Amino acid sequence: MLTFKKILVPIDDSEHSKHAFRYVLGLAQTQGAHVALLHCYSHIPMLVGGGAREGLVHEYVQKAEKLLAPYAKKLREIGSEPALIIKEGHPGDVIIGEANGGDYDLIVMGSHGRSDLGGLLMGSAAHAVLSEANCPVLLIR
Image (cartoon, rainbow, N blue to C red; front, side):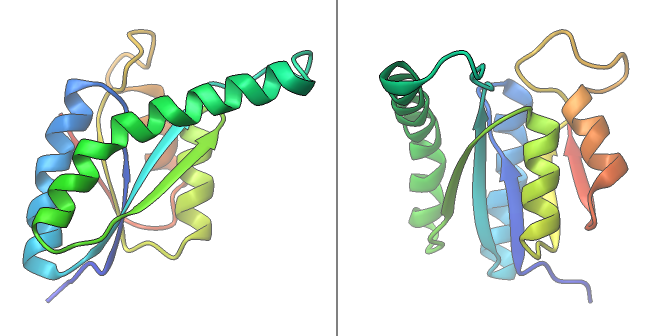
């Protein structure tokens, strides 16, 4: 039987992401999988430096923590302590980098994210992850 012990879950504020998380709860509970919740925030241009950069990073991280909090709470309610990962960059690149470097058994993500400008059939981040991840990907729509 195939089991998943370490699952990466990219989270944004889209309905697809929320729906994907419902599947993750079930997998975490039935398989005892460790879940890592990942959120990435927009790339900050190199022209923004010093205190302004630090202020933006702090603001983005606070927003990400607030976004991830209810997901982490639901995992804790079923006895699973999640890892919270917050990174800067393009979602596809960040997800692939984390997945390929983190020894994950599965990525569970929404087929479309926050942007309406993604690919025609699926979001651009989902397409990139499907093409380049080193582990299975479960796309939820």
